[in-house]
Length: 113
Image (cartoon, rainbow, N blue to C red; front, side):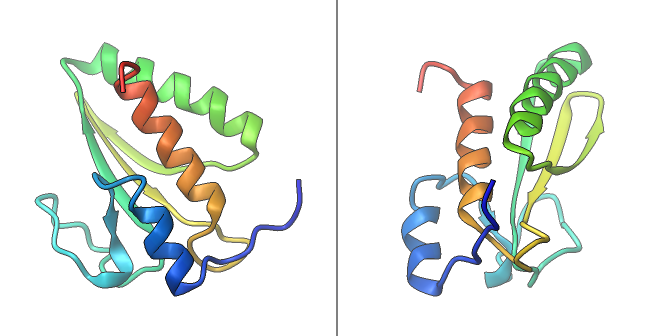
């Protein structure tokens, strides 16, 4: 896989419009989860599920997709919540890989969309 390239400001805004439920941390947007990563060049989302089994099943599906992409999320799970931060360490910020993985995660959570 080629080296990822950090999105420019214009590219970032265009790509973020495809994942409106994700929080752009670089803008310092406040979230209901009080993430401590405000200002980081990354995106964030908290997924909620019926129970632990559903949350863990989602994480398992994402793990398979992420491994195939060779792009792995930073995440944290407690019971029915999965908190995810996506950033590309190889380019020092947000890349198209993060957007694609976010889109795939959204689809795995809600396949009908």
